[in-house]
Length: 292
Image (cartoon, rainbow, N blue to C red; front, side, top):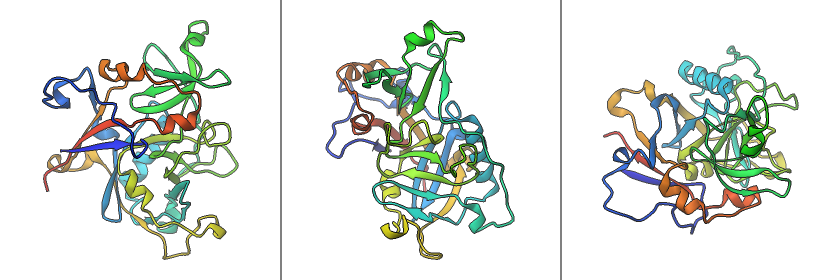
């Protein structure tokens, strides 16, 4: 069993709460949730696996396309052609390996209308312009307060994921509805008014492997991170975990950010800046790896 601490500062303490002897996350559903295998994307990069939790609740159309491309094998052996050290690793340009394959451009899903009754956020602060910051099922989000939804019809609140380290997002041109296959993996945060939030479609987050993402070969600053043909690291294999044989499927648990243990610690957190939120202690994950 491997414990992973994601998106936290190097010296940050875990949000796990000390208590009685712990049998395991499967025995504590009030504080842990199991990620469905169909929502787990396994990326093999430089011999290491990155596990991404897909978020169809945030970007359903983009997640459907990511699944389709993955299951067709068209992400396999595609290079990370643009990598900027303190920013992100961009890949997924299927035309570089599969030039005859085309996928449709998608309408941007930069934000979504959240129903507070169905998607409970554990709030940890408010920005200077009145937006709330909090955790939704392990990921950091920003958006309108629940109180606004209560006086709105329909009762929904505009919400978006923060581009913290480990988040997966969709690349596009200046046309907001031009994303097709290219994506990027966040190496460091780019959040707030001058960042990427609510401008690019986030579709998942890395529950393991952030250091592998940070280890992808970077490009030259003078070339805006673009690597020459043949020089880039590649995505060796992408697979939906549900498509693996049962005895090869890793099992992933994420600490419930609406669970009682997490909420005790979250009540002590007060932040007003999305950048500071990205460097809070990580949400804990437990990964039970398949037997070799």
